[in-house]
Length: 115
Ligand code: AMP
View 1 (cartoon, rainbow, N blue to C red):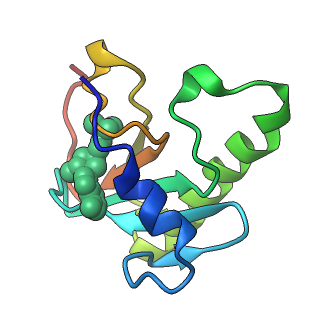
View 2 (view 1 turned 90 degrees about the vertical axis):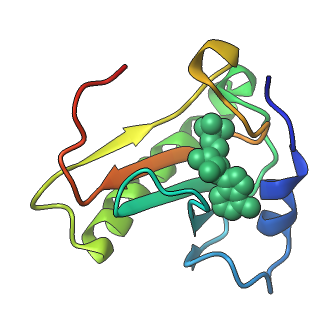
């Protein structure tokens, strides 16, 4: 069950919040508080979309931008050569915990099977 909608919303809408390691007009990037890999970042839209279920044609550029930022962050973290994984959890079967859409960037070790 997804809960705690406000955590990412609070960080995203506070331009002075210290958590983001990257910020532009559309997204912030923060380090996951419970990292599953040496590099575990979260790309979070500033717009408080609950999940992919709220995405429509007006958000196509935002979704594309999230991937562009993910690639840039992977480069900054030094994992473009070794590889990385992007994950977007959607709904209860995925284990989505936070009701504010976000993309995980995982890297820095062999990640193994999806499961
Ligand atoms: P998801 O299961 O896709 O909703 O992922 C939520 C992620 O947010 C989990 O990996 C948590 O460890 C992470 N998380 C929860 N609260 C925070 C926080 N305050 N700062 C950074 N990461 C967080």
